[in-house]
Image (cartoon, rainbow, N blue to C red; front, top):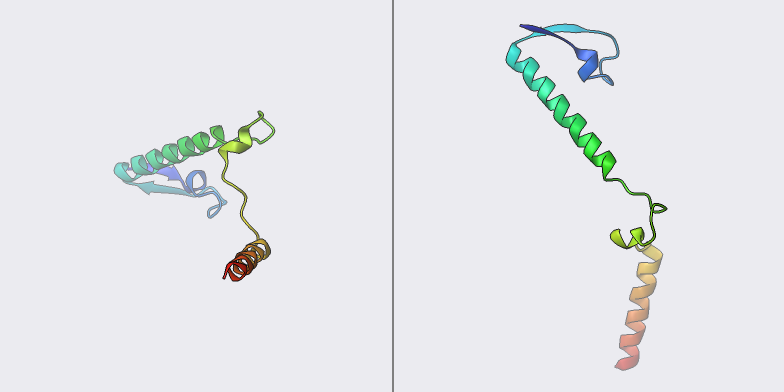
Length: 86
């Protein structure tokens, strides 16, 4: 049996030092998941870009979302063009 500190793994929920004895398998699984989570966080942080970093970086990002007003204006324009053709 291993003793783990819940504050280390569950800080937002458990803010005080709380020591708990758990089976070795559980302690190993918790430690492995914590390492995987930390690695994923580091990977995500590494792959973040700043639009000020280099010219042309904005081409790697999708277009900005169209506002509802712009969407409705486009639809209205399309309808007017179709009516003019008919």
